[in-house]
Structures are given as structure tokens and as C-alpha cells.
Length: 496
Image (cartoon, rainbow, N blue to C red; front, side):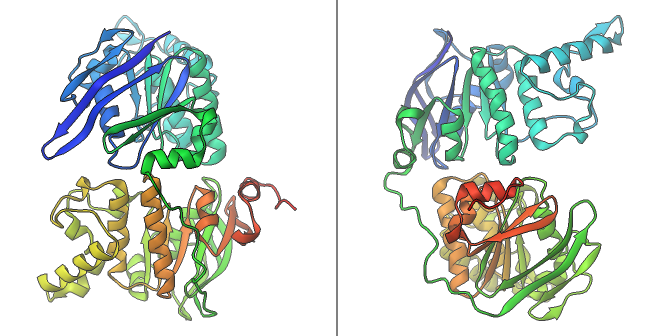
């Protein structure tokens, strides 16, 4: 049996103690979850394990051998492999080439392709992964790519495998395939360390859970001995989990109406109405067409046919500028690639959608800009010492607030929220939900897409079910439980 353990690991940045005297141990044959809210120190600890950064003081050991390395290559050589949330596979290469990249079997000066595919197939079979070795990466789904990243890491026979948010972009049925693979790893006596914001997953896949808060170890518990409420209390202390407030009233006024909207191979014949102040959810598995529908209504992608009416007026040939001017906002699924300019500061990122509102001719009116920025930082409680700080310095939750604040500065009538809670902790999620509810109080309507179906039941007035590009049903959260919602999204009928 192998054991990875730390002794009083401390990491100090100028003005900040990211980790303080962290001592913990992780043994093989188990899946160990490490959790904590943003800023808790879990990312710092994982970066130390993976060789991305060095601790300020303290030591860590693998099988009683003290580890010391200055970069990820050094960690890799000493038996620690990391699979990050961002995939590193080469799209134009085959599965086998990606698994064995940099060490393809050679026959003289040429690649031994038979041996390459033979080795890759053996690795895939050993981890019970049913993906053809000769398939190209671009033809695979996200969950298949995530599994290949793990196969690639395990091909080096590491003793420790770090999994950083491996299910963040996966739907529930895809997650179960990934969990099956992780359970296979557990049987192979690997130390699996699992980082996730999805608390409900922990009871399905983890054996233990180590909780960090404010850079300190709060405790390690066995998953079969702890409840969700107890874990949340360890993470946050006293945390008030809100449900949708009773005072959110829906007007009879229809602000957005979609009729027969279709886009080839994405969705077909979609019709729905959105009322003033309503929070409408769209549930469905990955690939059901949810995101593609939002993008088409916003004009980011062109629909093949169908009609869109906004505030009673038909919108012909919609594009983002036209829809923005009409009063529609879209916070995208991938905030880092599409919602933010990562090279810019918080101030600029809060003003991109409203540049015409703060400009005097060709120049920015600094007074107006300052007012817009201050309003969103204050109203959304964005934690940033200075608006001129880079947006990359913020936590995931605060980055998401910047994305939302950028659009709130145009005073929209309707906001599309595509996966608004992805990659943020429980406390930050609650803050995002409060923002959505506060907009509802102001008469602003929202459409929310989330892979976390529990969130839709918690946040929305009404939920549309999308399946294989079609609207398959509609439910009211008060009359639906999570099992029924999952069943409908995956092709079953409403229970009862």
C-alpha cells in the first residue's frame, strides 16, 4: 500500500497565507476528495503536489520518501500525475498517438504503428475504456476525451493521480462512465485525489473527504459517515442555503416569444414564451441543444428557420448587436473564453457591453465609466481590492459576477444564463442565484441552463425539458422531484 502525506505544508504569498500547517495523508486503493470554497487553499495544495509551485515550508512524502521537485516534470518522474480540467489532447491525432505522444514505439527510423496501436489498445482495455485506438480526437465527445486524459496519465504508471474537476463539462450519464473508470483505478491500488465543486458527486465516488477552509485543514471524514449538511458546515461554517423566494411575481406580459426555431443537427421546432420577471429553466443532457438554442436566439449562431418576437416586435435576422440593443443579454457557458477578456482588468470587463453608453463620441467618459463600474461592484458584491486589478486575479465566483455585471450595465429586459454556476463553490452559487432573483424582482426575465438539475428546481419558476434537440416537456419545480427531472431528461416519463 502507498501513502501520500503532508507535514505542516505552508504557502505564503505577499500579504496572504494560502496554506497554513496543512497535515494530511492519503492512502492507495481509495478515492480521496479535497474540497473547499474558492480561496480555501485546495488549488494551492494541488499545485504543490503537481509541481506547479513550491511550498514555503513543510514537507510531503510518498511511501516515506521525502519529495522534492521544482516543476511538473519533476513531480511526474516521482510518481505524481495530474489530469487538469482543461484538456490537452491534440485534435488532429488518433487516440493511440495521444496516449503515447513523445514515446511512440519505433522500428529503426520509423514509427512502429502496429506496436503503437497494440500498446494503446492494451492500456484502454486495462482500464475498461471502450474507445477505438484509431479514432481521431475531434470525433470524440467531451467525456471520452476526459477518460483518455486519465488513460494517458496512467500509461506512465503513477502512484498518485490528481483529478482536477474531471466532471465539470459532463452530463450525468457521462459522469457515471467516468466514475466506473475511477473505480477501476481504485482497484489498481492507485492513490486517487479528486477535486470537485459538485458536492453530490462525493457520496458516489469518494471514500474520504478532506475539507480546507481559509488555508487550514478543517478535517477529514469518511463519506459513509457524514451528511451533506455536515460537509457544508465544515466548508463554510454557518451557511444559509436559500430556496426561491416567495415574493418573485411573474407578470402576464410576454417579453420573449420563440416560434418553430430550428437549426440543422442542433435543435428543431422549438417554441416557448418567457414572461416578465420569470426565471425559466432549460434542463437536458449534454448535447440536447440547450446552449445552441440560447446562442441562436441571441443571434450568435444563425437559425435555419423560425421566428423570434421581443417585446412584441419580430426580430428578423438576429445578431448579437441587434439583440443587445433590443434588451437581451447572454452570459456564456465558457466565461474564460467567451465572457471575459483575460488580458484586461476588472474595470474594462465590466464595461464592454455598455461602451456606447459611457462614450462621448470616440472617447470614454471616465465619470460615467466609474459610475457603471462602482454600481456593479457594489450591487453584486464583487470582491476586488481595485477595479484596475486583472480579472484573472479574481476567484471563479467573482469572475462570474463580472460577466453578469458587464451585461447588467445595459439594463437588459432578458438575461440568458448559460451554466452560471459552473466551476464556482457553493457559497458563490448562492450569490449568483440571489442576483437572478433580484433581477426578477425588478421585472427582468431570465432563462437559465444548468447541468446541475437540482439548481433548476431550486432557482426557477418553470423548467422546459430538452431532449435530442426538441422540447420534450415542461415541469413546475414545486410539483417535480430530482429523480423525475433526471428521468425526463434522459428519456423517461414523469413519475406518477
